[in-house]
Image (tube, rainbow, N blue to C red; front, top):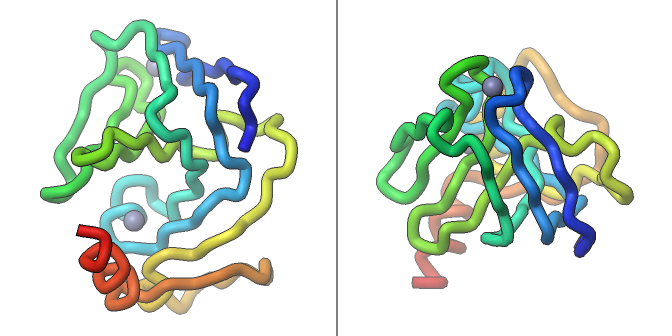
Length: 140
Ligand SMILES: [Zn+2]
Ligand SMILES: [Zn+2]
């Protein structure tokens, strides 16, 4: 867990982000929703709730499910976060924080929705949709 605040911004600079608790062991999500949103699997670092944004009036959010919303810069389209509504936890694109120390692909979510036209050689943990649903159901 990186405890040093890391600053970044979207492509156009209208939104500036400071994240103070970034886990560099990032996750990849292959679900249909992530791949439709970004055109590819979603590479994300978990940032908890210790995230400060300036230029927030330029952030548009979209409720992509009953439990999460996605945020992006309305001016340049840069994807900024996937946020769990109940906890407020942010999952932010790895590409916003390319210089983090210890970046390592740790988990692939929705491995059963990964299409056949790509695969990663990284050795990671994987969870299927059924495993994810069972895991989160057990936490409620
Ligand atoms: Zn922007
Ligand atoms: Zn996803």
